[in-house]
Image (cartoon, rainbow, N blue to C red; front, side):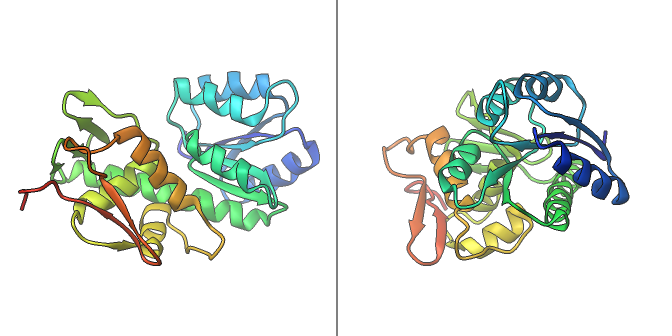
Length: 235
C-alpha cells in the first residue's frame, strides 16, 4: 500500500507517461479513465495516494473527490487546467491535499507525492513517540491518533488541514509566516501565486467556527501569515 498510486484521468497518453515515470521511481501505478470508475476504485482501493483530474467523463473530479472523501482520508493531488484558480480553490476546500496545474513536469508530481509521504511518515513516528496532546481553549489535538476534538465534537480534517492546525496550536499566540506554514505543513516552498495555505486556513475557520466568546480563532496578519489566538485568560 505504501507506494500504490491511483491515477484518475481520461488522457490515456498522459496516464501512460505518468505510469512509466512513477514506476521508475518505485511506485506501483493503476489508472482509470472515467469519473465513475475513479469514484468506485478510489473509495474502495487501498492506495497510498490518488492523482485526480478535474475534467473527467461521466462524473467530474470534484464529485469523484466528494465520494472518495465520504469513504476515505487517502491523500489526493488534483490536476487542474493552468490558470483555473477557481478549480484549485474548490478542490482544496473539498478536501484535496494538493494540486498541480497542467501541463506539468512528472518530476514535480513525484516531489509532491514524496512531500506528502514525508508528512505521513513524520506523523506516524511522532505518534509512536507519544507526542504531547495539544490543548488550546476548547480544542484538543492528539498528534498520535491524528484526531481533533472541539469540546465533545470530533472535527474531521484532511491531512494538510491537520498539519496546519497542529503547527498553529503548537505556537498559539505567535505569528507564523505563510512561508513556514507551507514548508512545514505542505513540505514545499511557497511561491507568490500559491493560495493553497489561505484556502486550508479558510477551511479550518469554517470547520472550527468562532471561539466560545464569538471571537475569531485564526487571525491573518497582513503580509506575514497567521496566528491562532489564545482564549482570554489562558497562559
